[in-house]
Length: 283
Image (cartoon, rainbow, N blue to C red; front, side, top):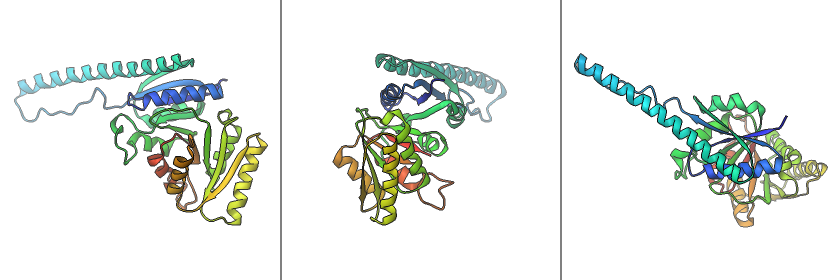
């Protein structure tokens, strides 16, 4: 059975980047692509009753008109959703990648939950339609997906560029080791330049952790450099990415924290907010 990636498109300026990254992933890993657009339950239906205490006849006429408007909005949202998927499919077709389309109404998290068991990766834009220029925070849908997705989550940056240099953030946590394991076994990272970095003090434990991570990659035929950076993870990793022109960041979704079973790591969320390159989060 061919493995697939699920690419979420919403018509925002990030949708093209999602498609470009989907094409890159599909070609590198021989994955099928399923494009998905989810219409929220509020799109085109269920409008509030704003008729107030007007007379019965006028109230009936108004409710009838509101019902008609709701029906029109529902039709428009469906038409728009189909157009978003058609445009996305055309981008992938142009890149030589075949894709299927899935349009559904409902909750985004429920839609992903129903589909992700058959998926290798969930792919989403860093910000959605309502947050294209809200650089100080994550889009609400993205943050919900980050917290809920059980499969590796690839978060596309605003613009695509070919991925050649990969930075793997390693903090010794179980999710960080799973991130290293994913890089070791996934065809996406074959032949790419890889560096594994720990942020903090150069303790014996930190050095041993990096040695173990490098050994895992070496065992899979992946060459990797290692390094230890001083400072805070968010600042140190961001500076390294900017100064050395890494194209992609891979990290665990949660770090060392007494709350790690309940929340995505604070470093992970901060890196998503500020990082200018695509990120792969691994549970």
